[in-house]
Length: 226
Ligand code: AMP
Image 1 (tube, rainbow, N blue to C red):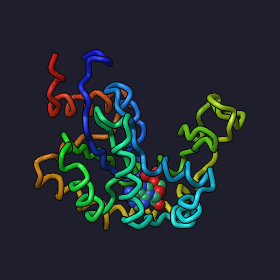
Image 2: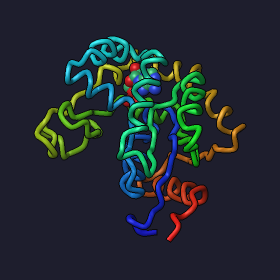
Image 3: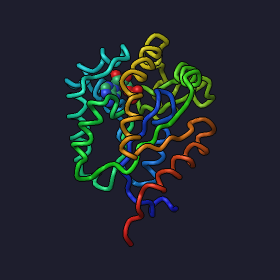
């Protein structure tokens, strides 16, 4: 299917930290012409800008904890009602708790989800990926620490500095993975019961994984009427 012919989609992408959600969600959003809504990116932008939300979220994020549900639900509800979200959206990093999933169900009562993709990657792989992850402090682009493109310590896109996020340091990684098992993994069953879940193998090249993701999305989304 060509990029501009792709119908809009309303989708959640689940998966452990480091499973590749951000990369796949970004590509899919570009293909489908809908916004990629990453709550982690929104919170990091708020921290950079020093907004009241950013000030509140920074310590919680650095420790690898979760920002309270009521705060997150408010942010996401506003974002999903923005004009550019009319054709659809790809939610990455939200919902993260059953409470957030229930709130999302209410927010989207009139424009329900098409599909929830669970991107599955073993724990050992995500620990290795997260430890090697470097994130540009300017534009947020993600690199591997050994990527030759950042050998001089500079992001080729905006001249920012690729750094290790505080929450990608070992203690915080373990804490985030434990939290994922406790708070977010139950969402897999939640969405399976609703008949919305598609499990996708997240191992392999970025292109291979993208092909799988696109395949399940295509199988769930009705083409736009001509
Ligand atoms: P991420 O980039 O998705 O791993 O998010 C980075 C951090 O932002 C998380 O470790 C949380 O502290 C916070 N965060 C992002 N999304 C949520 C959410 N839906 N609920 C609570 N906290 C969140």
